[in-house]
Image (cartoon, rainbow, N blue to C red):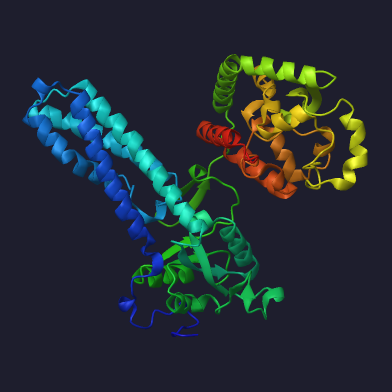
Length: 489
């Protein structure tokens, strides 16, 4: 391998201080644009605050000075709140939380500064500043993230990455990285232990060339001009070995990330438990406390009641359309398995002919869904009005009454039939720990385009990581997808 290495750890030979600026200049582009937009929105917000805040006669030197320095103070507040840290850009919710912290800090500064200069700030001035900076700060980051993700899906603005780890673990990590282009990692090399018998003679893993073992990681970084090293399970990278690798990468300005091997555990549940002798990764229990369940139920029923009232004309129109275009009842009722394995009756607008269940046996050979759920794009049992209702997911609206009753939630795993639950493996039974929902993670990630394993994995991720904020995000994405009728909410 190019560059020396020893059996005691990664080599740091060579002129490491002459390593050129790497392809990761994407972060500089991102930061330059982000700071420019933050400055622009700060000037706009200050202008609006002066217009809607103090009257023209009340604008004095204090307001003028404060307004002139406010954009600079906003940038400083964002910087101190870690809104510009490269590790958060485009991938972490911490970017959004930093805006909230910056607003609070700026508000505190206004209050303290007002005491020193004996200034009486106009309430409208302060409110316009706080609301404007917070809203526009979030909007700027949302727009920038959309721009970054669009580029990354086209293979641009990526970070060249070297994966280090046991061959099977490295293969799994590479697959996950390739399935998540928004993370911005482009795997260009693998350094593996070679201890797995199936991988001993391979020259590539998941299409990525193998460039030695863990002791060759730094040489691979130099050769590939990498910006990130991702370490997964590896027998030679524990304790001193990992520390030496971190030192070598630090001097090359290369990021080091370590895969914990914990699948689908959300960031807020992870924290470091530090002491003088060791650092442990602490994993919080899922948010299934009594208080959280009550809060979720209250939010569900409140929103469901509001939607039922607002959509009542739509309910009437759909019911009349079904009644006059197809013989049979307006509503379709079916037993489903709910929280804790209890049965309940689910309600939908009928979209199929009355004897649809009897016709199912003759159509099983044409199944286009997964191994457990029957799906057929051109199902002959669907009525003309049913096709329209399904396209916009209007057939699901009666489930709002299930939410009001309390046997369903707005967000959660989809309610399954008894036949489907009987095919669950032990892990899948965890889906029954929360109330089933009208929409959920796997619905907004592809609906029937996902296979059964992917669907279960997304449902389990939700069960372990749900929160009111996550529910609101899923509901927003559901509404957006339904309105665009892309069929993948």
